[in-house]
Image (cartoon, rainbow, N blue to C red; front, side, top):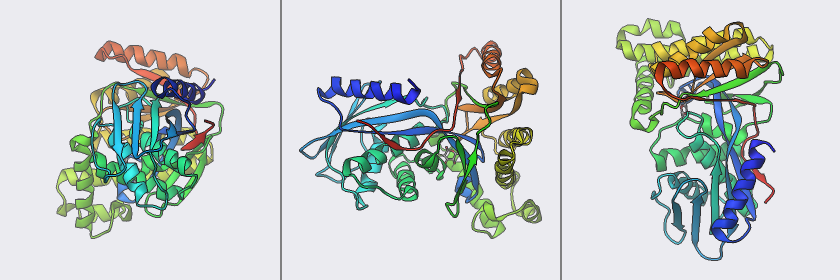
Length: 388
Ligand code: GAF
């Protein structure tokens, strides 16, 4: 059984225990790892994420009244949402992602009716792997399934992003919800975050593996650092007289550098150079040029550390260890996601990947006394309905 099949079985069993019945509709949506293109999405730029083989499942059965009841299979707590009232934020905290999607759905042509549901997830939380987007997209997919109607995938992703803005207070870009909704088996997705056009980028080389290491240092995106980075980028774009940093070259930035303080200049430099790296990385992947791809990942990490200042000593060390220990087996490594902890992603020769990963974790534990976790993942499908 693969991860999704196991989780599916858990969700169905937990539903039976919680509600004494069988679910009639089961939806799943994956977490994601971003291969390159960090903090470029809200600058109208480019990102190259892939959906991972770790997911959130919602298993549900309709009810005949106006109450939605949702239980988390692994944590205490049940959310109760009264559909006869306007849907607002509430407790437990995780329910806000669901509440936000329900509120968004009520503004579409898809009716939302009462149901009981259980949540089961194996997306590591706080690891920068988008457990929140997985929950939002799983909710939207469930509501589509219960209503037997479908939204266009871009509208669905945008609705989930709005839920995160309005109900979780996180001013995220579109990357996480897009890839969780539109991921495809075997492919990463190059997303133009301005036009919403996407290009499938095949990661179909059996000799190359995607290694994720969760530093177990928690990120604190909602704590304002993310919003500050976003504000700096907007300020830089305004000073350059452009709509978004997507529209600037390094020559444009340098020509106006006297209008910007050093921090704002450096943050803008990260975004402008990262956009360029992302497009070049997608082309390198098309050509199976993993050396080039890996070099771009390393440059991306340097830029996040030195210019955008969103890494931590633990994360920086994980990248250094991947390069030192992995030597010729590692093409590249970088922090993935919003920053301030979370995970690294490493492009590595498949053959020795698990031995190298174990060695990186040992060395990391010796320095920080933290037990990191690793797994190798493959590009996986986006939100989908599973057999109930
Ligand atoms: C978080 C956000 F949710 C994304 O939109 C993106 O900005 C990312 O950080 C940084 O690339 O995951």
